[in-house]
Length: 240
Ligand code: MD3
Ligand code: FE
Image (cartoon, rainbow, N blue to C red; front, top):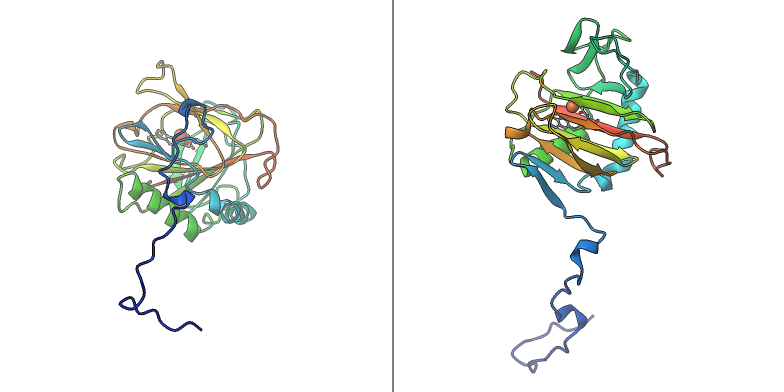
């Protein structure tokens, strides 16, 4: 053990400069840097929070597996009779479904007749934190949709407007294979902007951007080390 240093008796020491004293070196060609910015505004109410959930990837995928064990992934039919390409399940008090009768939120899985599995605490906590960071404090989701995309499966341009109070945002977690998200406008005809989304990216969509048309390009065929040949997307919503 050292004796405690008495500052009054020891001579002032001068530290040698180390590399840590240098100001950060800015990239010569920032446009060539591989690191995307941590936060990107897609619009006045929409934020990409790059990699915010990456460290929770294994836990989130385990949570999805547990949900899918109780409420298996399935392909649903649109009211027009078309089979959706993404497979879907849900957790939390309410789950979104589509069939010949239309789109709606229901308390029970129509496949099993049982309530949807509970919303995992980690998912709820991360969604609340992400919403707060994007300027939506107090977000309390009551519905979590889980979309699973195999290579070749996408989602065509649509709006999300089945939720009662559109003032609440939607928080989405992307896991597994990367895919290109399509960020459209208020009208379907507006050409959407491609936004690449990777494992661990979180996006918050709200405010004036809540009713934008959006879709997902099918992921390319590849294997993700944690998720295999799938892209998974969790969307957290306040449905009622
Ligand atoms: C933008 N899912 O489930 S999540 C959907 O990646 C859905 O699985 C996509 O669109 C996916 O409805 C995109 C992101 C998302 C969700 C809702 C939005 C983006 C949104 C609502 C308004 C604007
Ligand atoms: Fe959507």
